[in-house]
Length: 274
Picture (cartoon, rainbow, N blue to C red):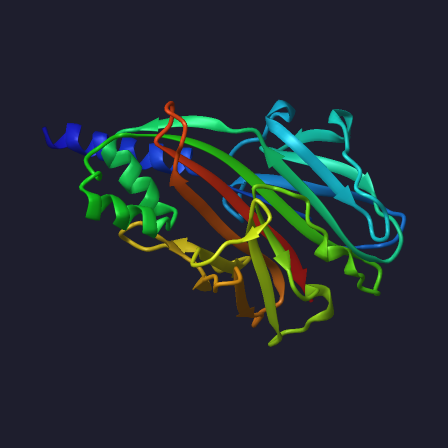
């Protein structure tokens, strides 16, 4: 009996971990030379490790903005797979700050009540977890429709540009209010979180950097920052370390579609600080 219980717990933990991947766009170095061959890696898993590649038919939008240029949408032949990562090849443009973004089509996941609670706890979606407890819904299973939207800011050459402010129009999107490539260690970075183009208030946002991530014994993420957006959808953090940084949020609400109980949009923003 004890062995069966341990197997069940292990299976549940594995299910939660495998079904709640974060997604990030990362460069080996976010600093590029003008007119150089570049590669950006799509991680599906954690900030440190991609668990599986993403098929191109999952991608609803792929957008690339080289500094000073218009948005282009690289095709399938610009991608390849390597070590569970999906990799986009492109050529950098002139000096300035560029953007690359990926937005996925929605998928559905169906979870038992316990699986859904564990997933909410594991990924730090604490407001929904508390709402379900207050409403007595924590014993109900859940069908969730989810999609993911990721952006990376990269710097070409030494001169920053205002391209970093460009809105790609994703359902949930971080918009930096100051250019991270104009900052140094100890400076503050402010980002605005939009939902369908409107500032999203009182939303939990996590921010951290490479090498500072983990999970507490009871499950939740351990990040460098856990903050809430203000009434204008703004959060500000101090960049106290060099290296690769990210902002992350999972916005989940009750679905107005009969086929689903919840709808979630996952969003990350990545960049590098020298």
